[in-house]
Length: 227
Ligand code: ADP
Ligand code: MG
Image (cartoon, protein in one colour):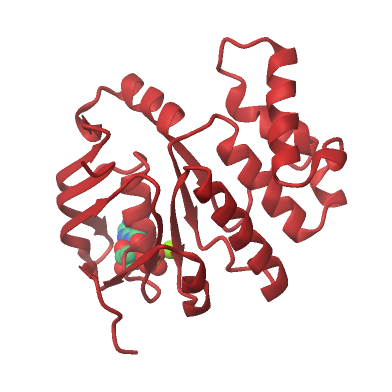
């Protein structure tokens, strides 16, 4: 049983000039424990697919099944609960809150839980330790390097112990050494059982993943496109 099933998904956007078909009849199955790369040129539909997979963007037609749940048939509050329970996101711009410390940024997703503040702090601290930032938890984002800010964003994405982490071009703005550190961290988290789906257009990143799929003009392919 795959963890994620994309069934005949099509996504259209209504733009100024008419309809843009961002994804066409897409089918994809992802098993629990995969570290999947989603490759494709700019504008091919990668971010659209990622946002659909993460429960953020309903398809125009077709279904997304995760862990036997028909995600977009959930009423909106249940959909929010679903995201909270299953999904963590890492974006290219880390979207850290500049006036909150690393620890406070990581605590944000825990704010709506019933846990005490003390418990939330302990959880955030332990995840920061896991990403190698235990001693820097009281720093503000601008007191951390780019790579460290990236780790804070990853800590924030995993603090809820989600089943799946989605990362949209997470290495896009990193130098190659920092990018490798990030991929090593993802690989370690994946070996601990986390399912990771990463958008990238960098072929060098493929060395770290367990499988790659390719999108071109909204159509999925299992083999690389010709450049
Ligand atoms: P990628 O992440 O591969 O660069 P996207 O998924 O962002 O591609 O975009 C796929 C296509 O859908 C592009 O043609 C883009 O212009 C269009 N698109 C994406 N988001 C929107 C939107 N919110 N409204 C209209 N068109 C969009
Ligand atoms: Mg994109």
